[in-house]
Length: 357
Image 1 (spheres, helix red, strand yellow):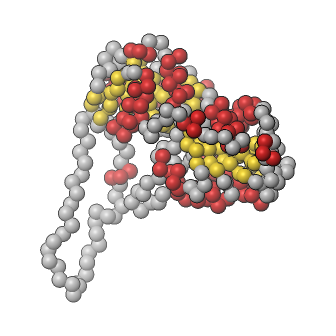
Image 2 (cartoon, helix red, strand yellow):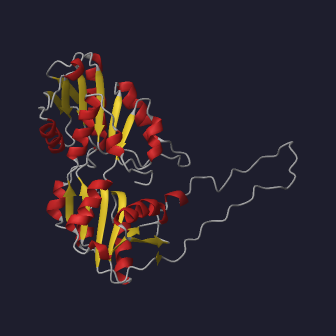
Image 3 (cartoon, helix red, strand yellow):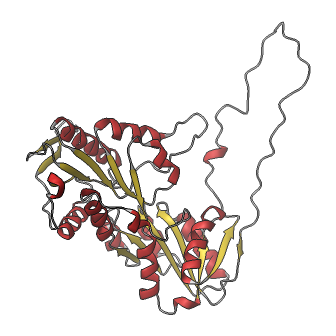
């Protein structure tokens, strides 16, 4: 590949989050990973030193979010970006396959929108462009003050279904909850398959925790007249009994989602599908965070296979559970870097992509 087109020399730098992915991207681009020392000091502060010149060069920082060390990964990225900025780099592109804190993109009572804070920090540190994959909420792109390319892994997962699942024509795409029905529909339409939706699944109780709003303080004697009109109470939601909308009996059930973090809900859904007659159950997602004791839960569950991409490292989890399979998406990230570097259109990478993907 010509890395000097338009008088712009490419420099690839990688943090400590996913060195294997960085090497895969570098080998596809036929460009070596640049020399940078990223380490943790004795006092647990992050230290970064760029070991080669980046003046007037286009720098691509490859850093994802390892679930075991998310906050350190973020600090490494911010410090690397700022080091390149102060070293007079022409462009600083953050290649972040899994954007951390993307699940915290909505206001939760007295919380805050953490993903917006992170976006502002990245732009302030010097990032001029972001490449990421399958944001949990696509509206997160609007939090950034720089261009964001939100790539999709669905073509790779669809290819895996067609090539690696025997008799996939007898499958049904399953939405784990009504919220993921649009994504499931998109997969089903591309594969010409049916769809089923699990309704009434038990959800987390984070919205039901007491935060003091249900017990307003007593109002002392006031000169304001009370007219006796109170604020109408909002009736609490009552979850219906768990139910599968659609026929899965004697079929292969394929659950699709953007990430697999806490697998308890996937395991519960798989048990329901098994009870309804599904004879094989697959779970497919872009980001395999697989937190906590996910490998053990998957191993003991009716799930036959969990297919994720290598946007985050999960080699340890794969050694603990043989059901976890990986799809390599480095070629997509490498192609996006090549196109941005050569000032080519990115639309080819988004052909036939819909908002539901």
